[in-house]
Length: 184
Image (cartoon, rainbow, N blue to C red; front, side):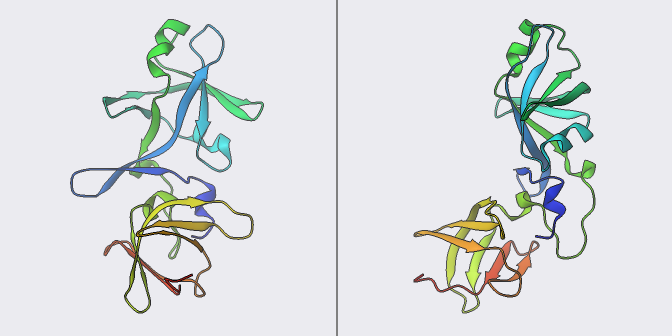
């Protein structure tokens, strides 16, 4: 995956064509004070990288609205922010639980062979022999190597080790080829 995932791990929001237009960077997890500030759970690494993006798309299944990031900072182990249009706790109430996304065009370009985690979610995983294992459901940060969590007839945990277990990633075809025994 390269280390570009250190900037944004992100989750994807796909349009009807499967094209990924927005990347979810976190969600609003609670209030902070009475002046409209909210707590943010960031999916970026490091967590404070979420503060580098503005405007944010805030929402979910019910719809999205654009909100400018007025100010924000690290606070303890988390992030707190104030968004445009939220000047008191009552105005911030509608934001609780909302996801935070940015447009793909706001993300830094990647080097060849680097991928945002969100680009890998949903890709078909096949062995070098052509056996389908399933789809990438999520990725885990596991010390030395990140791990693909593949859901199919059963769950597979495949270490992200290029040229050893992960042989090829083809985003255009929507698949990852792996060297993995389906019985393992």
